[in-house]
Image (tube, rainbow, N blue to C red; front, top):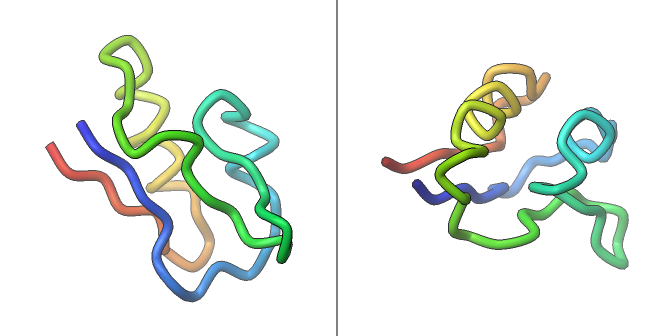
Length: 62
């Protein structure tokens, strides 16, 4: 599975607080994926982050 954050992040920090192994804030304060490839044991967390994002900018691809 792959994960990415598309344009529109509002820097709420929800993904980085809930899933710090998957997301981090960049130098502009915008969330980004730590790696585009999600480890298989963390796929459920990536899906949950996408569901929880208040502006739906976290995209997962199987």
